[in-house]
Length: 400
Image (cartoon, rainbow, N blue to C red; front, top):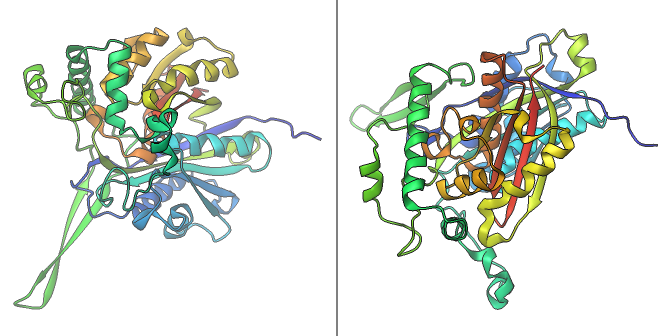
């Protein structure tokens, strides 16, 4: 007998500030960041007994070293949640955070749980490279020509997308500048304040002469990435970094970053029993595959599927968080789907705000849901991104 599908609601969502790789959050462990946002999310719904939470599903794109050993369970325990709250770490690369929220919602929709945590955490500061500490490709990737796209670096896939969809260097730089301008305007207006849970970074400095250790504390309360000193002339001077005659630069690509985000998802039964105010209803999600060498175009396949499952049209979307892995792919997706540019990343995107891989999806969920509370005219919102090795993901939320 099949389970009856029920609605899933997000009742809390928060995130850390996003730090630049090797920046303010460089020494903060990913499990500590995760514990921080889990605690903060739970604190936002004091009438919900944490013991009712069945599981925490957490995304991480490089689950090794400091973020290995099932970082989800570690984060739950460090957050002080009851031992009964289990933890599962998942990896779908850049969509891992929002995939985790989607999976948490699916457990509830199927009636298998009444309260879940979905989120993501990632430190790129502690990883030795974009490929992790010990990358090892399957030899078949290099033997067979049809597999070679799997070995392309992300930058080369962006160059392929720029070439095939005819996205000029000038358009990419203009898109990047707009990302910083929107992010800086949002910072000035305090629009990230409600979604961010500030993080206190502690630095221990030993004094060899006295044998004492001095502890310095700094409260990080805003994203490090947005730059006010950037202009088209600055961006135009940057050289391509992935192809000699290419158009993708460090300026029109996302920033390597550190951060975490978490959301609490509940059933309607829990919503009513504990008198919780929902931030949004989880509506639908979809994932789709594309050729690995043009992985950035993944949202073009995933978004229509998510819209169809939601029973709405793209015109019904009021706010679109389209991850800016690269300006080239974001523009290609925008144009291929004929999405309204005014609805895409109104507060800036990963080019300015950073992209802590497996955490980004959960972070952007917090951004979207915060905007929905601030602007009651927003009804439907979406979080979408491309995914390494050739995939795309999209999730749709409804303000209720």
